[in-house]
Length: 328
Image (tube, rainbow, N blue to C red):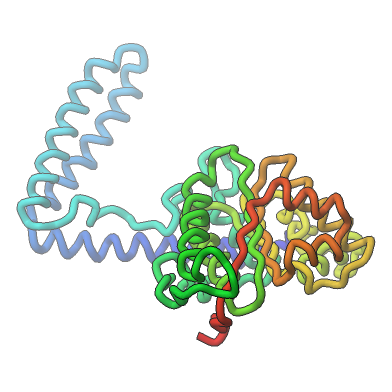
């Protein structure tokens, strides 16, 4: 990874961290002004915490009794503080530092020294030029999803109305998110013509999993093949040390959008199979979205890709009148 890119990302993390601490200080001063006794309690709590460290250093072999006594005092102080906050209608967490990521406290790294998932996602946004996805996901997510947009009338001989069908797809998609950490081998295949909500549903799932600190790569099949070609033939030198290629295999979720729009040949078919198959073997989950029908997929791709998709993916058909989600 380019040092300049890493420094840029770390700088943003530092700014987030500083902002969170600054905002906490503002809330703290507000509370201290309203309830001065809480400031005194915080000072006592800080001093008591120091006494615990001091007791351990002075008597490393027999500090337990002193520490236990100090901890009891600490708990009483914290209880008194909690009572004062409640009596003044101040939420107990109001004085906490509100980091964007509580796992790493906006440092980008866990206590183990490993990169936090939020840091990895920041690297992905850089490597894949996914910077605009955050704005899209603010508009397109489960909270903004409107089932009433879909007509509740029968459609071209389908058993379910478009609305009933979407309720089924919505339920399966929400279940996919809820059970994401289970080793259940669930993968989704969204298929149907344009303007029916496939991309919107992909965005809903991506947003929900990003909020759970999962690592999500979301790209079109065409862009994925560009990444593969750059990696295979070293077209762009060592940009990002090919981490963009590695994350196709390592991301918690890979969303391949618009399968079938890429140029189809022996090379592209083999590469797509390699990515999908490797992820299936390693238990990594994948969503494929395509305008192709299963029959058209079988005609374009090799039999083994087609059979693998049908065998390991839940096929979900999108149908109904063209809603033109892209222009809403």
